[in-house]
Image (cartoon, rainbow, N blue to C red; front, side, top):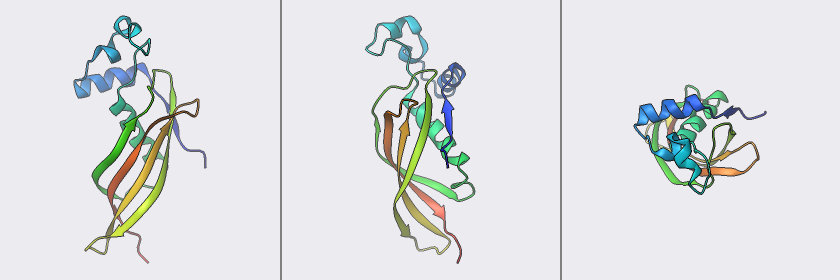
Length: 135
């Protein structure tokens, strides 16, 4: 199955700045950003992480099963993501643990975000409380 992908848009960046209150000029001021090592505006790292969570839901694997996020471990922002970049996510289950309640468990997932050039731009681990399958 081809993983879902999504292009980061100007609207994404503007909306995320408004919701988060992060109006850092590296994200919002093209002239300022031209003088940075990136040479242009970059998407907020947490915007990209947020888009990843939506892409993961589109796979259908996590729909109706996620109870709670418990932790994000060792998350790294490795390369900038720019307006117009198309990103996709990859998830690998690296550990599953039972809890004291039989209907749920802890799942540790290694997640990666790639841009349209197949460059790794973000990675880390999600620790989540999930509904367990019956049977």
